[in-house]
Amino acid sequence: MVWAKRRKHLSRAARAQLREQSQQRQRTGTERKCHEDPAPIRQVAKARNLDYLVARHTDRQHPEIRDRYRAILAAALARRPGLLDNPYLGGLYVLAEQEWQRDPAQWRPRGRGLCVAYRSLAEHLHGHYPISRHLWDGFLITVYGDDSDRIALDFVSRVSSGVSPRSLVGSEVMPAPLTRRMLHLTLNPPQPMSLGEATRRAQVLCYGGPEWLAGVLGKAGFSEFVADEPYWATVIHWFCRQEYVDRQTYQDLFDYLKTMHREQEPVILAGRTMLSLRREQAQFVKTSDEAERKAWKEEIASTPAAPPCDIGDYSHGEWRITRIRNARKLILEGAAMRHCVARHRHDQESGTFTFWSLTHHGRRALTLSVYSPTRRLDGIAGRSNRDPRRDELVPVEAWARRNRVGIGPWLDAWPLFGRHDPTAAGT
Image 1 (cartoon, one colour):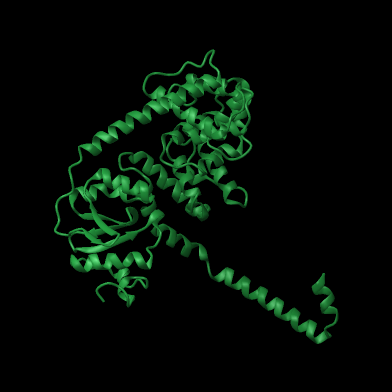
Image 2: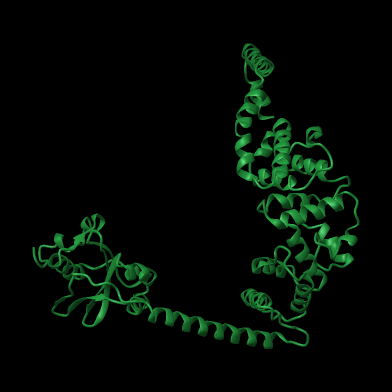
């Protein structure tokens, strides 16, 4: 509308010239589209990577999956080359993990978007009857190559082929005990999600729980089917009937139940309250932490002392630099200084690094590390990994010069280092 108003103010000759330029651009575009066929060029570029995609995403132990995957990639390359990009590439691999019902070469995509084209390919290969599009889209957000994807594809393809979903409950493709209402919610998710996530959501809603509890189940590791689904159905039912607690507590309780189930001691929730379960979980965590701490102390006690070195300690006034000679003192150093030096106790044990502590008036100031093969000062860290101060670097340089310890390149260029201070010791 604005362009039409503007053209009214132009002269007749100017409007004719603009009209001729527009027609010329249209003719040029039509001739280019007729004489230059970009499809072969694009297909050659994609076909060059077709063998690479097949070799990268398939397992050599399953040649039948590799052949089906190659056929699907070839069909997508001919009809919708955009499907060879993520996330559709992983979805194509999922479709190849099971024998299809129709030849992918006969597939004719419908719709203009890639999501619609992917769903049409999935229905062409594995279905006769339409189902929720979110179930097909769920294969695009999962990690392909997982066993849960094979189970989900088997269930979805059977339902799409006309098999009653009720007859699949309790089998290996749907191990969760679901009612009719649960099956209806599972087959009609509100958004793209995996079959396991849709199943958990249906169980939570039908048991009267809030929808966000399904997300907590997913974070606790129940986004896919697990062993002994009937037991976990009773667990979900029990949690849906309890009072509200924070989400972190839910996740801690689920982790506790998973651990006990893994140790062949499943917790029976009949007649239990949330308070008693939390008390039992807290006692279990306390006992586990004590056992782990005891084993850790025994390991530290059995760790041999660090090998000897010819670098000596240093003392000047109230400044002291002493070597940290065993793993226990190194851990105490890291805890007191609030940094990660305790992670390097294996380097201390092997003699790769030696660690030193700088104190002032008996209080820890810096932690030093020396790389033994090159005899160089590798790192300096204060409390919470703070940078050293100028007065702290003066005794460090004096100690390094006395013991002929080199200074690393990044420490040598440090503007605060003692060699740049005219009042430093030894200058």
